[in-house]
Image (cartoon, rainbow, N blue to C red):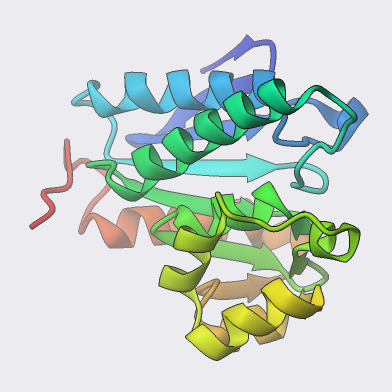
Length: 205
């Protein structure tokens, strides 16, 4: 069963909730509307005992939407994005990122914040904004928890992108797969992380 609320399409299977980002016209950029919609969906999942795990997936590139807006708006958006990452990191369900394209900027932060991640073999990961002088202050905490410090610093200071295999070797993603296997692999990982799909919730210590 699936339902759509603008930016995020929700579906369920075997106790696993899938949140599919649904703004292909901006390549699923993590703009303000998308961040708010994803935050709201994760809040609902946190209170739903029938949800054992959550998969966040995008059908195109997962990136931050860079636009020329007033500094106050940028500050508010960074605050909302930081709140989303904190919710993901502390969520009582297992959260899995299923990456079906490039994860850049805020998209990289989303992957880093999720507990587990699966990516297609052609995916790339990076912070292109640093080449424009944009320091990823909101993304850094999640990034440095997910990557070795030196590699995280290299990405942040040079803007170098990681290949999917480099991301797997560094521990940013758990699996790299062909595109046709992305969703089934993410679903299998979600079930395995909870011991069984029927488990109502994951207890974290």
